[in-house]
Image (cartoon, rainbow, N blue to C red):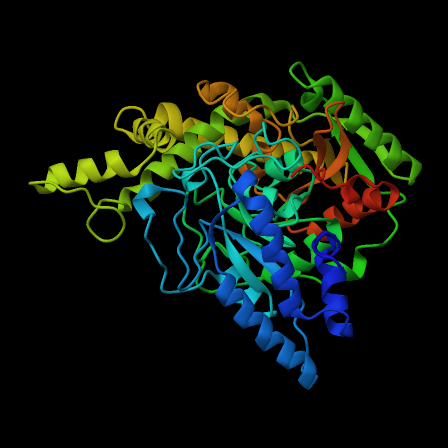
Length: 490
């Protein structure tokens, strides 16, 4: 089996071949790094690679397979981890100069889970600095490019993770989603991205951006792999007080159940002016597919959707302002040379943070400042509750909500970097799920005339990822969009 064939396998297929003896974990890692060496210079998906550590883990796994030991759910599967998730002994930078040399002394909870299930961590992926962005152009080190067209952005902020999976440089990856940062890049790179319910996955070891919004989620080649990876990382963790105590169900057991009779809501607010025509047509096609599978599709209304972006950019920036106050040049991270404490503090932050992070810190500080808290943060919190109530009301009538993931396909590098408002609107369809705390998944549903991927989003009830995955899998079984890979020009 050649490199290209091995790297096109899903994680599920790879594990089966490793267990059967058709492949060794060491052979897989060697072929994967050959793929990375060929494509990484063009794509720029990784910030740190750990070939030595990956090969060592692979050799240990091969020895265990020979001994007949019980395999983990991800035995021998190479996984990439977004670089705002802590990995013991492996650099974690958040794509920021201020954490450029930070090496965590501990693993995040999700990384512990990966290791416990025999996954092989191959490296840390690029992102918008501190996960603040929608294009991975705000990285403090380099932009990441879309494997389908290297002139285009891969989405963000988990653009490195999505690009790595799409380009065959990882079998699956972890991202974080604060306002769409797993689903939107998955959409633009033609892969699957899942944001779990807030509290379904522990945030212990995730470098905080917006603490009431952040959630770690899988980015994979298909829905089955997303279910497997969620199975691994979901569940209670006492170190995260926001992590739900409820055990995660067996997502694979219901994955292929029929969906006849499932009620699918289509919100009229998500098909308004500004939606790209090709995206609209592709998502309309998915509705017909679901009707053919026996689902009941009905139009619904989520009336407060129009306020979601404004609410998000008050709440998220306010939480970012608070969370990023710890980067002061004193305890850890970048420290500027200076002749005084105040000068050192201000210069460290001025030199260490990029422009987008500074913009959001200033916005958030303003929203929380004396005399403005009630007018901005408090009012945004109240409207957030109205958005959440919209979904609760909708889920009394439907089981899931279907809509586009992104209003447009991937746009050109540099096209929106000077227009923050236009960039922020890239997440207009994904932000509401974070504000409401509900799960959402993006799956491929078509391509533009320029061969750029189009994704649709399915949102579900709190802690009902099983239904979300089942509905997504049903569409996947009927189509081949998830089987397509970027061209050989890479």
